[in-house]
Image 1 (tube, one colour):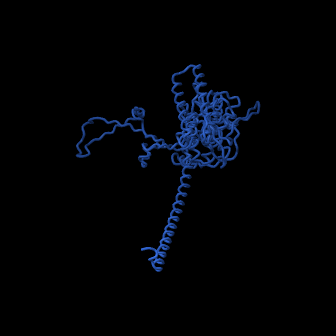
Image 2 (cartoon, helix red, strand yellow; image 1 turned 135 degrees about the vertical axis):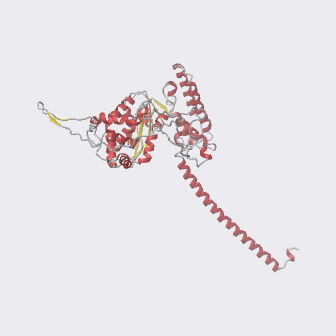
Image 3 (spheres, helix red, strand yellow; image 1 turned 90 degrees about the vertical axis):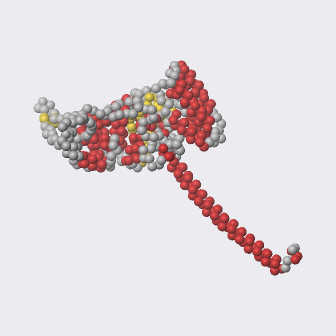
Length: 485
């Protein structure tokens, strides 16, 4: 049938049908557009959420994050396989000794007392036993019940010299120069705060529960401050030892001082660790702590304060390798850079194990430095990769100090490890209130860390410095504002 054979009514009917179909298609397209808009909105929300999570993740997964803080669980690691296992380590390893390593057993001391545990008759039938058939010894270690405090009154006699008129007050080694708490209380309060990380009110509760000794949180703070003042002379001795060291690892991290930004610095050698809380992150801090005439080598990261203070540096390879690895994950141009840096680092470590001569070290230093310089001169298109190359070039004189100096470490892991304890305490206490809090914080952290490095008992050492140095330490001027517990 042709168009000419259709009647007007039929043509009109077909037109109306087409018009209705067009309207249906328009409605369907409108619904699809609305659906697309909804999906786009959901996608935008998901992108915002991903960006937020990536920002938070960069706190733990960025080039400047040390391995100890990285969340490195893999598909093969226990953290990926079993989320309910509370004993899984955060670094992807498993708890316990490594396979093939001999187990470690506790050393048990000889018994102070031997108790014979006997039985006269059978618990089942009541038959009397004639004699023992054998002995199954069991060593049990127990601590005695906490003892109540000993309260001693010291009647300190006064004397006047008839010859020169000098007034004298007799002293006793067990009588403190101030306050009503003895050496053991002061040492335990300080150790509870900086070793066991207890708030001052919890320290007071502990003394009350274990010993029936009533003191307030403020009293626990004052006892801790007395320990810090007593140990300040030893703190200064540690500083002098570090000033004379040939190699010092230095690092810093943020801390709050009455809510404002401050910094806790660490200076570490093989036998000493010193902390300094300052409101500055500049080169004036190492100049103050180490002295303007410091002649040793500083192992550090890339912070600008270090080259501003000294030209004898060893830049941390762990930092630059992490930055290069991070860039290689996102940019193709960074992959050969990371590969070259890693091969150079691993190769140098293996070569140094051959105990090369001084001349060989100097030759390797020049050769490796030329290799780094050639690497830094590469032309790249991506700005983050160019920034990485700029950092390599900027530290060209400081990456290879360890090649020429056998005692220098290529990484700053020692200083980063030393900052772990202050970081944990920072999460607990939040902020230091004032200068007195800064004084106590840096002093006790330094003493405890150094004593542990040297294999000394922190509690015995605290008692020693409190007992022997309290009279001297009272001459140190400290601010008169009391921090809160």
